[in-house]
Image 1 (cartoon, rainbow, N blue to C red):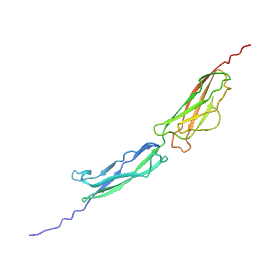
Image 2: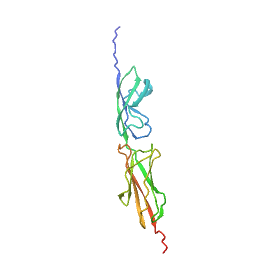
Image 3: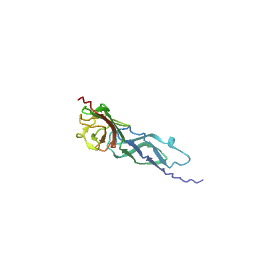
Image 4: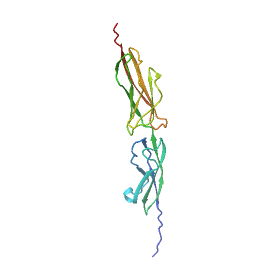
Length: 193
């Protein structure tokens, strides 16, 4: 009789974290992986341990890219290596709307304007610049925790109408800029002679 020893090495298996995107302020996405490559028709159920993936980013990490790292799986038959993915935190789009305290006012009547800035995730932070007919009205107004910014009052608007625009900006650039406008109608003041 005779015998030979057959040496069997582990098959290489690459576990690659898939790239993901998210908007600033949103929840972290579910991380997933791709395997390259199983043999004999096998799949991840043939591995031991437990796959765990994570990132250094949080839901309020600034707009940037962050690594996605995975680990935890084991095998007697596969030499497992892990390749990081990339999490891209994107600027969150915003919408800005404007309302007047009295959309149809009379000449000499005091009015003020309120801008509301919203996003699909959390309440935006930043500032609003109000403009009347494209001319700055007051200075920058900080957006409050409720997403609103209020202008000062004005009583010198003339007949017949004016365009009031609110321009929102986030200096940190985590939220996208946006603007909204409203038309202020001004009627003639009654005058008895």
